Amino acid sequence: MMQLKRGGRRLTVAVSTVVLGAAVVSCGPRHPVAATNGGQQASGKADYARSADVPEQVEPDGTSVLVGDPQARITVHLYEDPRCPYCKQFETSGGGPVLTKWILRRKVKVEYTMASFLDGRLGGNGSKKAVNALRAAVEKGKFAEYHAVLYQNQPSEEVDGFTDARLLQLASKVKGLRSPSFDTAVKSMKYRDFVNSSEKVFDAAGHYNGHAGPGTPTAEVNGYRIPVEYSGLLYKTDLFDKYLARVIGAAT
Image 1: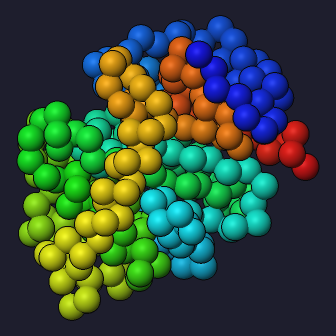
Image 2 (image 1 turned 30 degrees about the horizontal axis):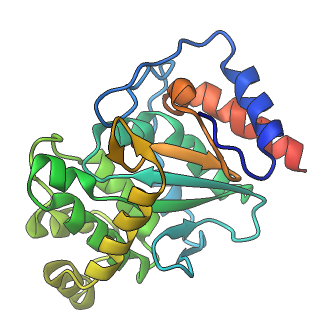
């Protein structure tokens, strides 16, 4: 069922218009099944690396990370798990690069709620470790770059591959991220409270296939949650770009 908040009707019209004629996707056991992305392959990492002035901060509630100009009129709230392969598809070849473009233009800001439910379903603690490391990256102003690197180098979902050693190795790909304080934060799970609080927010955000929490990735635009039946929009760069352009145009 559609969840509508502020501006809900306008956003409903926009998403319906943009996806008209697109295939409706089905759902997997925990994630929306990804549709093809229309042939585009891209990554936000390089763009973020060229724009050191993109603001990042932990939100006042202490459970999400905000990336982008706080004054941007469009807020996209994303629910993701570092081990989720559909999140990887979204971030590397779907809507993620589109968000990067609009963030750098200061038209959109993104709130990330990073969940770790896959550790419970699949075993291990890689998601928790990755979320902790991402929180540590905020202290260096490197969340966005590191977030991109983790998804570009995501291990197979069933493999608990985000070990301390691997997370530090991947952090070396982000200029200026590694430091004694960052390394210690990763190894000691310094931000364990943040990890647990973020998971609780995710669990309370809805239910999917009988489980607490929505499917991942889930996106809300100015409080409007893109319905599961339209989730293919998230993996099609051209359609997601058109959707955000319509929402941005309506807000200006």
